[in-house]
Length: 161
Image (cartoon, rainbow, N blue to C red; front, side):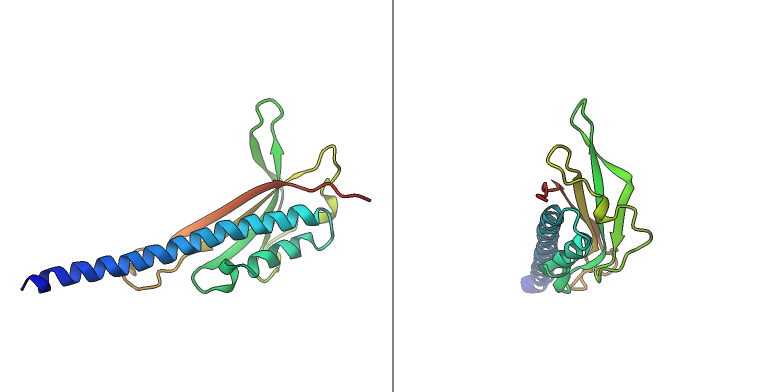
């Protein structure tokens, strides 16, 4: 009798802990992938294939190569630092959106060749990975899949000509 009362609760807690673990793995994988992609973008600077290399870094990461999460898009964009207070804002006029396969979504508004990689005023670059975590165990099927973002900012590395 007691087992019949406790077993469903224990099974629920066990499955919920597995689901939470998979969600946290996906979240940490996304944060790591965003950092790696931003590092690649920073090092690639204004090379013509900088965005391709950046998206490939996401594709080759644990996030891009596993089935635990679905990457909706990878955004690469310019950031502007306010000289008065140091805050950083997204420059909405200079940004590119890509599918995980590297195909551009819409217009490429910030071609890599136009990026400032001088030591005096190198651009700040941001990478955001937009992804969805589909519930793996089916326990939370009635709850919509979480739509998540992982973001990382870096300064472009000055290039030596």
